[in-house]
Image (tube, rainbow, N blue to C red; front, top):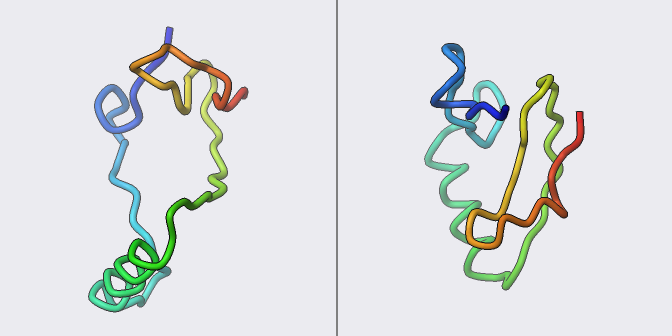
Length: 69
């Protein structure tokens, strides 16, 4: 059975970009610039959570990019 990080888990939280002490306005400007300059992007996320699905394409049910823990 899968669980949703922000909904099912009581300690779930929204992911934020930028490190501690980063100005949120600066991070927003950088992300906006990246959106304007790129047609695609990729990122790596370190994920440690037993018996859960990190990603699934809801439309197709595709688990090809799922993270196995």
